[in-house]
Image (cartoon, rainbow, N blue to C red; front, side, top):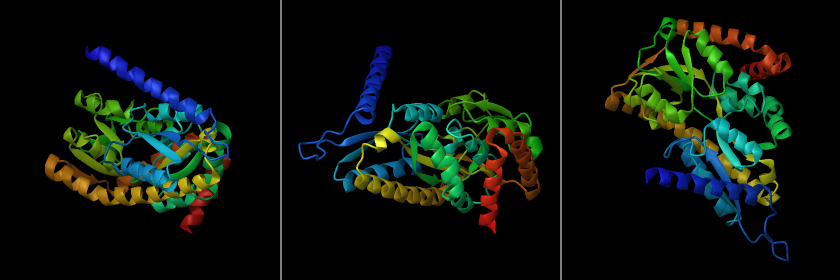
Length: 350
């Protein structure tokens, strides 16, 4: 009985997605004789955040604002919690037009632009402000926004800054030796992260986010690395009792739309959408930053998690290994892209 019900639900979801693809990407918007839109444009957006997370709430804020400010002409249906698949699957569905929009981390976007591997490499940016200045400047426009649009037909509407990634583990981490043999889960499809963690001595397990909790329960993984709100929302503090501020990677949540879907929307409503996406992004960043301290405090007080920071010497060793790995990847993104990025970072720091 349960198996039949599961099959029925899966079939209904596929039918819904197929309908969304045909209605949004492949057909004209219904209009009356005077050229006035008679039905809303319905856009399907996928993201990987759990209910109640800052990213999830920001997507709700964005969708509500767009629907209200366009007087119902544009409606966004949200699919969170990885319900449509891992980020790499969401990425491919977006490019194919199976879904219209996505809000995913740029670590999963290297098939759109090889420079993404460079951008998510460990210990590249010193601060969130530095990262955002680079990504919203000339470098980000050329190697990120333009590259996605030209090669994949996907338009970047905005990038939302997120808090740095940390590490929670079932074993304490204080020195480089503590990484040796540590089974660390990383997202699928990010080769430079695999090589970077292996350079630290860790054993890398690549898997989707939905599998991680069970894997830690079974001892398949000892540690996961992600922002504190993801750690907390997916309840890793119930199993792992050592949170280490590794601050090893900064990245953005990229809000994108398939270009065919974008072209269905009037210029007036496009402007409304961009404004709503940007406002939601600022709210998301502020929420994540304000939530982090309270979430960590609850991990300590309620779950007995021990929180620690790495010494300056250990961080320096990790940064040196990260730079060494970047040099080994130079043929992936090219010397020109690397030099342009270093120039953008240097200009910001100056």
